[in-house]
Length: 524
Image 1 (cartoon, rainbow, N blue to C red):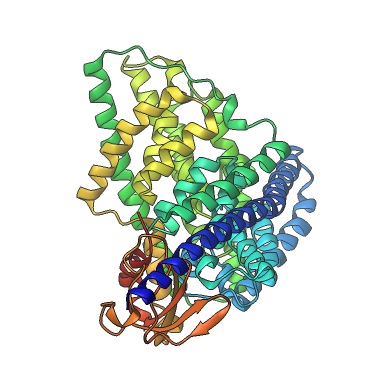
Image 2: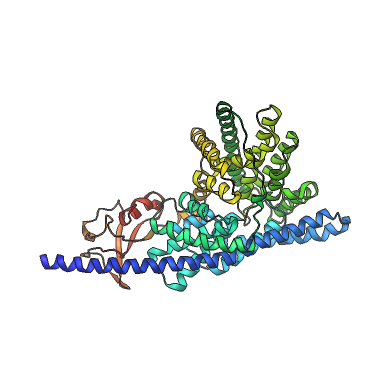
């Protein structure tokens, strides 16, 4: 008995060393995932930027009326084609963050990742180029997860490590979209993975840094860095009152924003109308707005930057009208289900809301005109907190992409207050709501049993335990242990670091049991 225990200790020590080597390989592969994601997601961003400028120049040139007829028909055909792509490949719909989370959790499997990646890439470019108010961040995240999936297949990564590469690709996608590697890692932890493991954090950060470096080479000048920020010189008491009022306004508006987005998306799906007519009306609205203010289309980011850089003397009523117009248009576009995210439209709404509050502060003598952009940046991060409920991501993202660290501490204060008020208002995270709507569709309800693959880490609860000794939740069972490239039946197996354990459970329980089961094999 003692000899067997001694042999097990020697075996375990060897597998710990082997596990470190495997981890090193995983980290190297995650860097490769970041590079590939950057090489795909950065051109995606560049194409969106290029075609938006082409479209803006066309409307700015004020061509003869007859030139608009073929262009309108062309964009109509484009949107119909993209709708057909979504119908054929439902996983490319919308932003892609809920689908990415489902893929990491194992709820869905990318059966044709390359084809879906290409469809998401061109579908997103075509949708935004037609003028729809959609963002680039969600598609970039999903594109990164497709890259992670492909690399996992090419490198024959173990099943338990695939989710790390999916998460790394997702984080690298956001890093490529904004050149913000730290915020991208936080997004994966807060919104996608929602249960951090050291490996996930490290692989995501490594991939994000590489993808962010690629983005910085293609876009050496960050437009957000051009925003001039002047910190107000008001007293501590006035500052507290102003920030408290700002947090209250953002929280209430965030509640309305979330309700409208979710409600209209659900109603849109029930509208009895052909895809042709839906796309016609959608494009008609985009075209009318393009005549009025072309920078409000394509997500509205250019309009936001324009206001942040030179909107300190704008009229409050005009900014309010533009914000409401952009919001209504964004609701329709996001509800259509075409490839494109809601992150940029949310950012724009938050920034314009901050501009309104800033202009009101100027009117009542609380701040100076040069301080309006300061309030806008704080409002952008706080509004993301209210709608997406990812406080760390929102605060770090705005600080990282703008380079203005003077807004960090105010963003923490206003973001913290906003998070508290959104708890009182019971605002559910927008991406979580979309995820739950997705898994409650008939296709997901048909799933019966599901297999979760986890890796045993050194010092975890499972480390050194016999499979027969483990107490698992009801209807959960270990069906396989993968070690040294071989599958072994569980009875009588004593688990050691590096073992890939397959646990079978009811598919409908994965959201509740994912974290408890993974925690049995991990150290936090």
